[in-house]
Length: 393
Image (cartoon, rainbow, N blue to C red):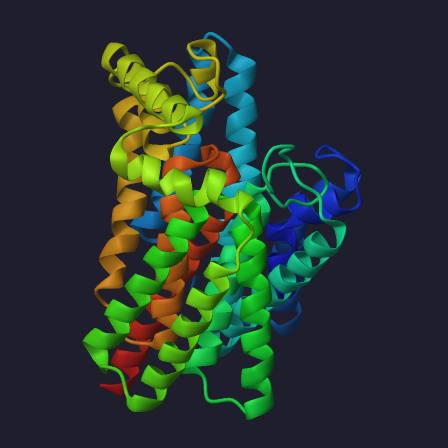
């Protein structure tokens, strides 16, 4: 699980050494990571002569179906090379992680322990990345602070830190730990929050609030809040308010004032580009309803490479056929939320909601590796809880 966590963040690891995004290091970690996990499990299974059941389910078929749509779209796309490139990247960075996580967890004796191991790994990597970014002090903008690693986009760092923040918050509030561990977690939360603010990425900030809201709603529906958790939440809220009041002034120029523009409808350049891209994607879809124009070919109709929304992207590039697979995939995930009974399941759901929201306003389909990882974990938790109920009955 630590290997998968490292592989999932290979882009940042590669950026940290300043070697660019297409080097051997990136390929070895990002592509070789999940493949190595497969190989280790297969070898262990062969040597131990142990068989285990790995359910495929509608979500598994949807992941495969979406890959086939991306791949076959090269047959009719104006730029077949772009379609093939997207299909390969989706297979390596999304589908492979989706199935690697499922494969590892269903092979494990205690899936809950393995899931916690993965969560701890993500949290630690996020904290180390935050400290590294704060020390280096790189920014991708010369006008306002947008903390990053290696002078690349701040969004990957922001996504990792946002996930780590939610995980650390969970361990602080929900897990019974010693006072020392609580203090260390609180310090880690402050560092992660400070880094998240400095990345100046609005989508991840909104995603964090949505993730927290989902977790609180799920936990309250099951147990309510006891006094101990209430006091920890109150302490955290007071600390956050004080922290935001001390935030640097230039953060408000893009971040907080950006929210004000969104509410008032007085959009800035970033918002206008996205709205225009979404409108273009819908226009393309209206003229190519069933199969779209081919994966990766949105850039042939718009000056931006992708619409910054996975649903509009798939609709325009792969039509209703591709959209159906994506809809089944996401629908299955949200349906499983209603069955979740454990706090770990609620946390995984919160992380999935976080990544799902970011995927609606940032990056392109094959870049959302974390979305497919949390989606896979969500379905595994659902299967695990269902099996547990059957065993108890």
